[in-house]
Length: 132
Image (cartoon, rainbow, N blue to C red; front, side):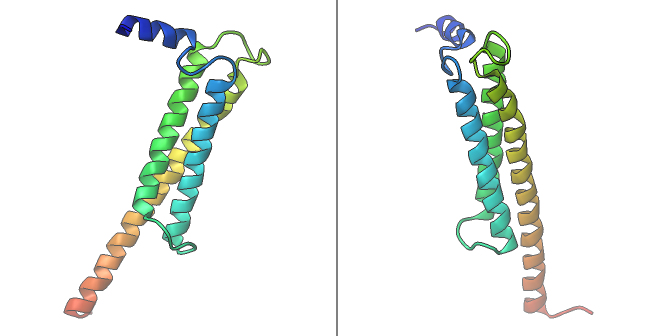
């Protein structure tokens, strides 16, 4: 299959799926991103003790980006309007869900960096003694 054929099939909606399949996929990926971002924030706050917060934050941002991109692609390729069964409303709902996942991931990443810096500072003070 040539690149032109692949793009033609993608524009017609054949890659993502017909009807609600693409919107459901985008919703699922966005929801997984939100869950991963929430777990990364919980890891940083010390409420759970499994996993790596930085890895979770990056995964949440990636899942949010993929979910938003899938939703936008589905919106661009589906015909009709809301209520036609083409998944327009689901794709519209998936865009903010993906953005929320990216925001949670970004917040978890920023908090992990802040926590890492303060831990380095405490370790430095223990090693060399307090300067004040």
